[in-house]
Length: 342
Image (tube, rainbow, N blue to C red; front, side, top):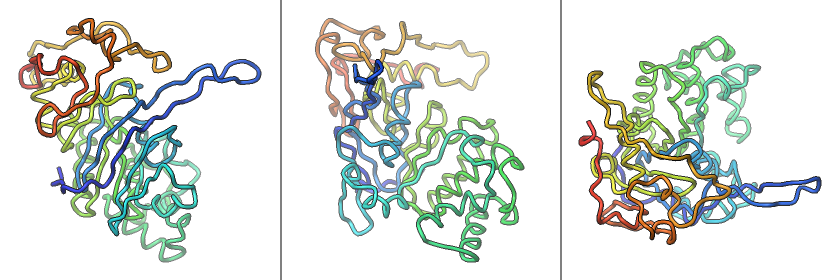
């Protein structure tokens, strides 16, 4: 894990991403899916920020909003530039945004579907250089060769197509495509979830080495809590589009303050095969983001819920230094972390 600087490189304020639900021949809007619902968080320079939660909680959507693959419905995406200015990425036009696309890059989940099978490795990794008019011809080939060597691939492989590579090698190609422009922020969306365990360890180690070498800031999106515990400096927990808890990794894993985080911690695999699981099984289903429950979104599944939880929406607040939680009862609960659940 990288040592974080005090200065934030990215601040996300009141960001929402609502997808319209259309109905009928005229396509009238009858509602919205609240994929990202009023998210506030900051990312420090040089850190790895883990973003966790169940499938459908909005973590991938938030990552795509940050790089403007999606146009946020509302909110601010405040980015600190190399010359120490602050720009709101959410307000920029496509032309104004173009210079910052080289500084914020994304790494995708599936190493098979994220690479165009009709393009060679040279074309795939070199495409960002061509599109941004940074390198062409021999200069582009040299830059691609250097980047491939940096991610552990032989430069002579650049004439091959993706089908000639294993899953781990394809993910290395994806990493090369993300870092070829020397970015400052990389959003890794489930970057190792599709890989075997041994290959996963190699890719994580590679990403950590690249972070130190290139002074990268990572936003690491994952459902694998074991990976997040190993790689992240801080962790943000999301539930139905909202941030419910945020803290340093060790603090959050050992002293969770939100009942949902406690349930996630209970699902972390234990190294002892003879150990009896103390997993907390949540009742009910994840709420529909198009029709979320009143009050706290988690209250229908929470074993600690009281009447207030169904009536009043909790706000994200700092309970201990650096540890924020969105729960009415946080002060009164003593929740089990990873150590207690083992």
